[in-house]
Structure formats: structure tokens, C-alpha cells
Image (cartoon, rainbow over the protein chains, first blue to last red):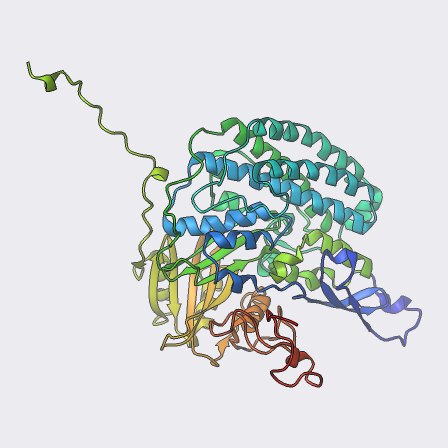
Length: 374
Length: 204
């Protein structure tokens, strides 16, 4: 940004405060940002959240452990499978349960499909916000197939409730692996198609390169996780650092960016989808036989203690901090929401940019207000 | 000939895979001698009140007055550069302080995590760690909003998930799960105190 002072048409004009949202299509939900602007330049921004607060953590306390799973679906509603995975993982480790290998592999397939589904929503809406309307139709077509696969597995498309403490509630239906395999086989060609629309698109590049830059050190200081952290060049992924399920048995790379701008985060997510395809293919090939549910007691009752468990969600590190008092209900179940923490860095990313860039930055952080407000 | 001698020798029973055994829950252990705890004790002496290890995770309870020193030492000398999570737990009846404020730190060099914990009584201030990790800002606001824990020297300690006019702190154990009278708080002129619409009430 150059020195606007010199070119100001009205030198005596004042800074203005405008309210961006909460009912604005580009805020991806009910996010309100109070923006102080000088002309078109953003001086400061202050996100105001809480419009979707449903007291999920309070509700957890009156549910049994398995009863909390449907509530986690409604946090990040674009990624229900990874939410389930984080919750059941925390409870299983507190109880010392080992999940049967077949269940672990099914979980990984569901979670990676979910990552692709979440990234397709992100790509479609992010591009739509910036002004490229076409990718939206392409990406939602592929997402539909993923939702069909989910529907066939557990009956739900969005709020899946597809995992239980100790394993999986159902085995895979007849022919499911074949249909899933066919889908992931054709997906790389679709991803290449989306990339052809955007990666070398001049408008896309102008709108994203150099917008919302954050350095690696600053990203860690602001607690960013997931693609926003990796876009800044930090090679960090919970699946590699603390492997859960059977992620240590599959082969995949962690894509990282270099400049920490919106364009790099875009490239990171596109590559992540390809890596997810790679993981799913390996899982389908290796899928072992056997039970899908471990021998867990009928009544889930973790011992007294506290445990934090996190998974690499599509948006970043999603963690559950469970405190048990030895009864059937969690004494406290706290969520470490990736979007909530990532959104906090928004003022840092938009300061000095134009108002139109705010839309790009909100899109690149890939926030879901259901998880932020809980 | 004895009939039993004809029975072929039985192979020793194969051990069952862990998912078919009854799960064995982890036990809490004293962790004063744990490497991560000794590191802290060496840098900030007398700060560690208690140290427990449960399921491989170390929890260190620290005196409230020392938490800022410990956090700063953890970040600057022990390389815990990343504050992953900060939250609170309400132990309503506990005599030595009602709330636990819980910090969950990560270190990149050897991928280890550490939990710090402070016990505070209701209405007592905890030093804010926003000066140590910037990310603590919204986390502390959330703990304030949900539990009513005050963080001293926080730059902007406001409610974050509930609205400005809200009274009470929802995640306290004595906050009713069916909700409170919210109408009186927003429209004091229209509804007398206690006379507004009740969240979660039966309605008309």
C-alpha cells in the first residue's frame, strides 16, 4: 500500500466506521466485523461474534458421552466426521480403548472424504466471493457425490453422527468401497479442472497474491493452525506430529506455502485435496477385515482425570479437552475450535488493505461460524 | 490305554487383540520427577505445587501469583512457543479455590505438550498471559464470559460469545441449564426484573 495521504482527494475527510455483516453473504454466516476505514483503506477491524452461540459446552455436560456426538456435528457443520473423530478419540484414550483396525481405517476414509468436501465448499464460496462464479458449480457437484457416499454409509448427509466410542456403528455397505474408489479415481482430474480455472487466472492472482500476508513466527504467535499456518511455511500437521487412528501406516505429504498470503493458502488446500485422495486410495487398498467395534462397556464411564485430544480438521487443529469425574456424563468438555482461533488474526491480516480484500481474507481463513460460536 | 493320552496337545491360546479385551483405563501418576516438570522447577523454583501424569499428559499446578513467571519462562527458556488452548473448569464445592484455569502449551522442537493449571477463588484476578502469547486474548475473553474469571491487565476483557447486556456466566455449575430470564436484561423498560420471557421456558 502506498502513501494514501498524498493522493487523498479530500484531505480533511475523517475516518469512518462501518459495520460489515452480520447479514452479509461474504461473511459465511453471521459474522460481524466493525471496520474503521480511511476512504477504502482498512485502518482497523474488530470481529464481533456470538450470534450463533448455542451453549454447546453447557449441553455436553448433561449428555452421556455418546450423546454428545450429535452435538459435535453441529459445530463445524461442513466437517462433521472430523468433529466426531476428535470427540471419540478423546474419550477412547481416557478409557484405554483400542479401536479395531478396520474401524480405524473406515474413520480415516470418512475423515479424508470430509476434508475434501470441506475444501470444495471453501473453494467454491471463496472464489464466488472474489468474483469467480464458475468454480462454485463445479465444486458442489463433486461434494454432492461425497454426501451421497455418506448417506449410504450412515443415512445422513451433513450431520453425520458416524462414529462411536470404541469404533464404528456400522460396517461399510455392500459395494461402498467400489463406489468410493471410483469417486477418488476421477477426482484428481476434477481438481486439475478447478486449478485450470484459477491458478493462472490473472484476476485471481491479482486478488490473492500479497493479500492477507502473515509470517511464520507471527502465525505461531497468533495460534493459527491448519492451512493458514502451513501457508506461511510451517510444516505442521497433527496427522504427522501426533498420529491418531492409523495415519502412521499411510504415506502422504504435508504441502506448505512460502509467502503466507491468500494465494499460497489456496495452493496448500488444493494440494491437500490431492493428498487426501492419496490417503483414501491407500486406505481402500489396505482395508483390513474384522470387527468394527471394540469391546467397550455398555455404559461409557471414563475414570477420573483430564485429557486433551486433537485431530487435524479441515480448518486446523480441532481439540477436545475432556474432564471426567468418574460418572457417565462429562464434567466439562471443552472444544478448542480451529476457526475461533484463526479468526482472531483477522485484524492482523486485513490492516492496510482495501475493503474488498476483507472478503478475500475471510474466505481464505475458511471459517464456519457454527464452530466459532458453538 | 488312557483316553486322555489320545487328545492332541492343545496349542497355547493366542493372546486376544487389544480391542477384544476389556479396556484398562490409565491411572494418574505423580509426575514430580518427570523431565518436563523438572525443567520448570529448575528455572522457576518453588512454583510447582503439584504434578500429575494421566494417559501420557503432564499437568502442573502452579501458584496463582507465579503463573505469569512460569508462562514467560516456558515460552522464552523452554521453547513452548505455541499456546494451543486456554480454558477453565468450575469445581463448585472445592475449598481451595473454585476455578481451575488451564493452559495447554506446545513445543515444536520435540513435539511435547504441557498443561499448566492455576486454582482461583471466585472474584480473584488471574494475571493475563496476553503479553506472552497474543493468541490468549480471545481465549481469556471466552473464559471470562463463560466463567466470570477476571484476567488482570487484559487489553480488552469483554464478553465474546454472549452479548454485552447478558448477566451471569453460563458455564458455571450453578448457572441453570434451562437458562435465565434474558428479557429483563435487554429490555429493562419493557419487562420488570424477573418478568421477561425466559429462555427455554414454556412460552405462551
